[in-house]
Amino acid sequence: GTEDLDKVKPRVQETGEIKEPLEISISQDVHDSKNTLTTGVEEIRSVDIINMLLNFEIKEVVVTLMKKSEKKGRPLHELNVLQLGMEAKVKTYDMTAKAYLKKISMQCFDFTDSKGEPLHIINSSNVTDEPLLKMLLTKADSDGPEFKTIHDSTKQRLKVSFASLDLVLHLEALLSFMDFLSSAAPFSEPSSSEKESELKPLVGESRSIAVKAVSSNISQKDVFDLKITAELNAFNVFVCDQKCNIADIKIHGMDASISVKPKQTDVFARLKDIIVMNVDLQSIHKKAVSILGDEVFRFQLTLYPDATEGEAYADMSKVDGKLSFKVGCIQIVYVHKFFMSLLNFLNNFQTAKEALSTATVQAAERAASSMKDLAQKSFRLLMDINLKAPVIIIPQSSVSPNAVIADLGLIRVENKFSLVPMEHYSLPPVIDKMNIELTQLKLSRTILQASLPQNDIEILKPVNMLLSIQRNLAAAWYVQIPGMEIKGKLKPMQNKKIGQTQSSL
Image 1: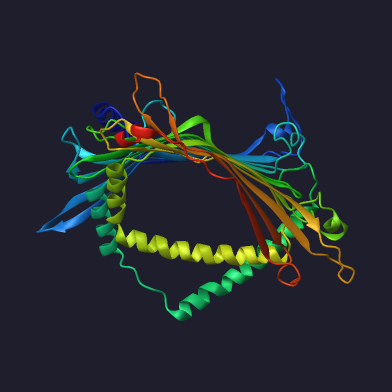
Image 2: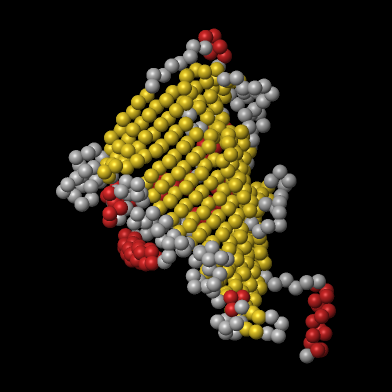
């Protein structure tokens, strides 16, 4: 009653606000969305009617890792997540869902930063008020009136944007965290019976996926079954230990996309910039890795399912996929002390390194098996690869401006396909002829000074090399031609006499 309400009001005024850790709001419209509703003010279209609206948000999630010490536990690490939520809207012909993560941080209580506060291992940037992570999923009905206009003929669309995240790789803090995880959840190898039981459902799953992929070809050619776009604004990694700071790594501007049609799949990825800084105060060579150009790499892959089936097999202009890969010029300043400190940092993680090596071997075995299957099916991948090979600068020492420059030049890869005429086979063998051209490889010496222009003295004149590789894509059953034949041509190398100036290095 009103008396109970009056008793509550003073308590609300004393606290100032009421914090709710979890908020869920669901509303549903029970109108017949297939009909147009007419009111006294305006006419409501059926496509604008919201059948269900869902708002979900967790204000804060705190996970604290405790270690038993004497009679009570003490905190080791604390993970803090702020404002994790989702907004979903269901209409007659489409559905949209937005998920967001405002901020994330993780601190270690065993170690402190320069200000004497607990060390932050993970911390999201506070430059803008934008959420750290945003995801938008849209599903549209192809029969809807706005499918071609608003939804761009796309059945499913997923957008992911990542703002900025700072990561501190502190050696002792990471080892402490790994030691806690290993003691909390000891690793055990699965028995042979468990491995067999795990493999059995995978076979069924792969068959069901294959069936779905074939059935999706029924849709129209101009309809996108799926579009995925992802953007990464900035990712900063600081490498250090309890004694000194080692490196500062900054990655900026990475984006990727995938679009799937019944007869075509496009994959795109790009990285704009990466910088690895040597934070040793005594070293005069600060930029260990940097980019000389607009972007680090640009990757484009287009796959055409069933493009070489039937009569199209004999048409060499038809391919199963096209690959375009361009890499900008990466400048590497090799300071032995800096790279050895990075190597020593990584050598401390023996357990992780062993797990990584095991995963690498398994991945290599799967890749070899996949390549074997592709060779049996004569998979044709048309390649256009342009690589600006790295420029490696090797200083005499971390405090010396004298250096040797190894410019690895330009690498270009192109290929084309041809048929081997065969009368007794319905599907003749396919030959892949690939040319790998390496140009402008040279060696020189210089003096690195920021205030003066860099004058290079050639030690080795530019070298050009051409490799011709011929692959038999039907080597599994056609053995008259070698599976791979490699021919190389290297022009004579000439070194340049530099006389007495050579002794200065």
